[in-house]
Image 1 (tube, one colour):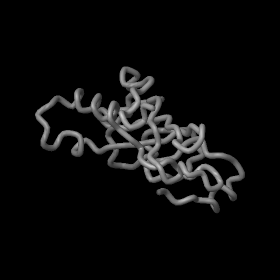
Image 2 (cartoon, helix red, strand yellow):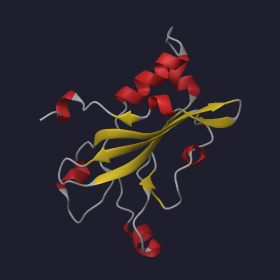
Image 3 (cartoon, one colour):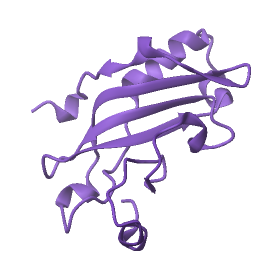
Image 4 (cartoon, helix red, strand yellow):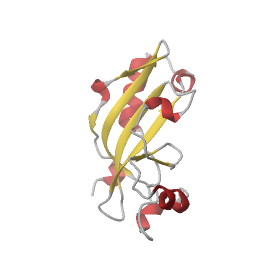
Length: 139
C-alpha cells in the first residue's frame, strides 16, 4: 500500500496528472526521464481500481541491466514481455477510505512506452494500446 501524500495533494490544490513508480503524485506532464537516471525503458499506464470505478495514470521504469541479465532473448522481445506483463501493484491512494487503495490495480492501457537509445528517449508506439486483463482481473 502506497503512502497517501495528503499533505502534498493539499498543498498542490489540484489532482495529480499521474503517479510515479513509487506512488508519488506528479503534477507535470509525464516524461520518461522523470522516473530516474537509471531508467532505460519507461511506460505511462492507465490502471483501474478494484474497489471503485476510478482510473489513474501511473509510470514505471526499468534499467536495461534488469531487462537482459540471465536472458538469451533479444532486448526487443523482453520489452514486449515487460509491457504485456507489467503490473503497477497497489492502486495509488485516491479516495477517502476506498478499499481499492490496498488492492492490486488492474492495468488497462499502455498510454506511452519509451526506450532510451544513445542517451535519447524514443517513443515506442508499437508497444502502446489496450492491455489484456490479467487472469485474476477477468471477472
